[in-house]
Length: 281
Image 1 (cartoon, rainbow, N blue to C red):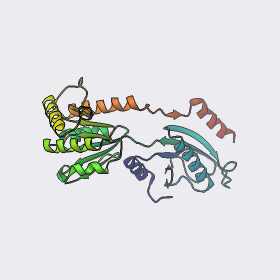
Image 2: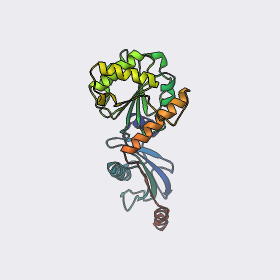
Image 3: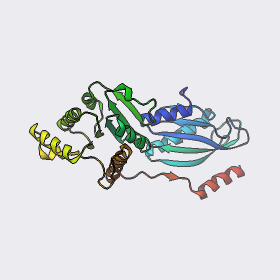
Image 4: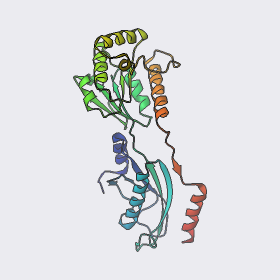
């Protein structure tokens, strides 16, 4: 067991994008090692906090890892009779809620921590993605970042592209058109991205396409960069309006390419069966 508390572990898992299960004791009968409301967090290779230890906790951990291996979000209510199932002398019964949170493999990199970048970060904080914000200006780093985001301060933001995983969705929103262009050149030189978008007007888009063509990039390659970024139907020039347009486009494209995750929950009939089973023990 890791010394980190269950709530600290949730934050860490969210920040890293790792899958995890929250195990909560929701009901107890008789003599049990922990009371209702006790929690622990289980990942593929770690456990955090405790709901009682012993073989009971081992069984819970094994069941949680079965859910993790399935790779699907779900909520399961399961009984654990300590005497019959866990061979523990206290002999009581516990009901445990297992909430499986799948990993987040949607990687988004936002270059630029200005007004639009900050507004976009606020929206992406509530979406199932991992966010990296890159900027050269440390004074723009927020005092706190959402659990699913990190800030990368780099004097040369272009070099930060080398640290990003393949299939990252890259959004370019910097304060400097020269930097924007350098980022576009590097993005197209080694195109391993799921999506690339550039903020700007239609005039900026035309000028960038012409410059990129003079740099030797083909028309097919240049069209990989979406500029102006954002849904056309979402209008407005305020930072939040622009951010909403960008986020809506990202979400729309993501779910066109990926099946929307659905959770599996314990049915009410199953819940009644579990509780009735405890009462008959």
